[in-house]
Amino acid sequence: MSFLELIVENYPRLLLGLLETLKLTIWSLLIAIVIGLIFGLMTVSKKKIFRGLAMVYIDIIRGTPLLVQAFFIYFGVPTALGLRLDATTAAIITLSLNAGAYMAEIFRGGIQSIGVGQMEAARSLGLSHSRAMVKVVLPQAVRVIIPSLINQFIITLKDTSILSAIGLRELTQTGKIIIAANMESFKMWSIVAIMYFIVIFILSKVSNYLERRISYGKKA
Image (cartoon, rainbow, N blue to C red; front, side, top):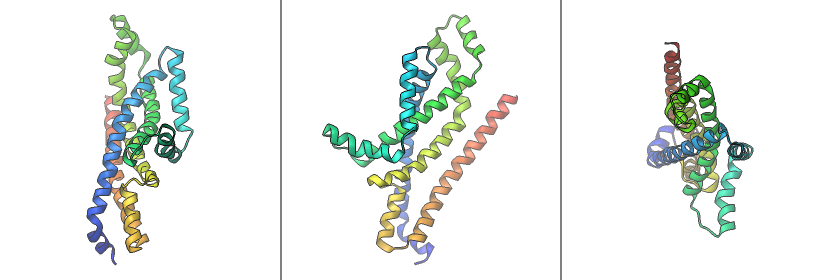
């Protein structure tokens, strides 16, 4: 079977797998942004307990493999608590917690990149520390970290392929199922790789474009 015949025969399933990958990535990143913002603010908090809790979470997530985290959430937690968890829910939780730790570091770096004079100026106008952070520092930090957020989107999108190990029917798992039926391993993995590459290439170009725009704005 040729590459073209293989694509024509399986493109509906491949597109569904790609859409599942994108949906999973988007939902996970939206949740991860919230988690990252909360823990990012905690890392720069004046309260030691908040900084400590944030660093424990970040160190645990960054210090363990994603696959182990997925197995823990999909197999370990339900067994310990007597719950039933489907693969999609487990995948979203895993990716959200994993990306959230890296998002926290991205937010921390963005906040710390804003000069302390911005906070001091806001405080001198009568704003509290928290209001100054929300009204003055965070809007500037978000502008700086947008390229990093897109890069994290790319990383999380690629990480979805690892979660095929828990039976998630995303693009990689779809490729495995098709290969099991026709044994066209080389051709099918080439098609799957090209599909990932196209999406990631587009996102990379968007990230580079935004980075140039931000750098231009700084020079201006």
